[in-house]
Image (cartoon, rainbow over all chains, first blue to last red):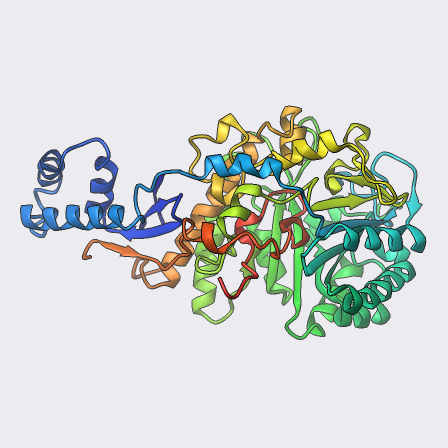
Length: 462
Length: 48
């Protein structure tokens, strides 16, 4: 499948099944658009007519361009047939291994953010902290079910995981002791609102956490609007200096300043730029996930604003990079040469199969966003997955599982999208979240445009 | 090719033969937690 688009002065042609990216001039752009349906002579006539004022557009030159298109097609870099679909259904028969757990070490929180998908940390249930025994059993479950996988991932999540910090530290120590005898490597992530960050947490996180995800929504007035404590006081002034201290002492290790934007700030690039002004360089900003009737929910009116914002962000990032003050944005991080293989692109995020969430009581759910949905309970860390029908449903949830994705050029970038988003939007994990799809496609277009410019193939002024 | 410049990319068809080790990061463990970031991941198999 071929997708063509123009952005920031670049004419881009994606051959989605080979993963090829071509940056072309306007003439080649038109030729490629006509190529599947028209003969060579028809294309030449159409181009000579359209570009009659351009002396460089001659019959010989057009023939040469047509030969180039054919050469790319013959080389499997253009108009590549989609032969992956049968493989997607083979995945159904694979016995899944578990390689990543989201440990909900605290179903409680010290902030009271109204837009929280975890319902202020308790996931619509009892407030609770995970005991060391439950966490230890979860780590054993992970190792026992990880097959030959070496790299295992554990995210300390909540609620607010720092409200159960001693257990986090004990679990890290327990996991480290498992590494050599079981020939595994643990990578830990801590996701925190920052309220309880102190020197002890920072030192431990810098020593043990492969990644830290720090929640900040951007400008003070935006952040403090929703990220408030139970007395209604904004948290910005209390967390920003702590985040700065943590990031400064992280010495190149991964972190993300992660924000959520809502109907209150569809102009979210101002918040991303504010994060950069605070000295942060690894940034992420996510559209809110909430019920459509929630006042924070993004609306149809917000959509064109948000789409434009992604373009503004990409252009500004290129500009700042050139000026030596660049930053990274999670959704624009594409590694075109060392990115995911086709198996990963088809199978997706692994929710419900290789990735699961564990509640403070040891119950297993397909991912953190399904916690609290009783129908989506997979089992527990003692018995393992008992609802195998549910696991099989997630196992078959891939880039080819949804009819809406059949003709979508982006399906090998999103793998069919987030199952939780689909469920909340359509009632089925095999539905789609159409609003999110539009944002996703725009982000990929922007990210690839940035690659073109960074390769020196963009407009001179970019 | 005068009018067409091709960026260096990983050939997905080729990755049928070299990929599938399953060692790469689970996308939700990185930064998003509320969308699918598979495209934003890196391959862990340096010998691919």
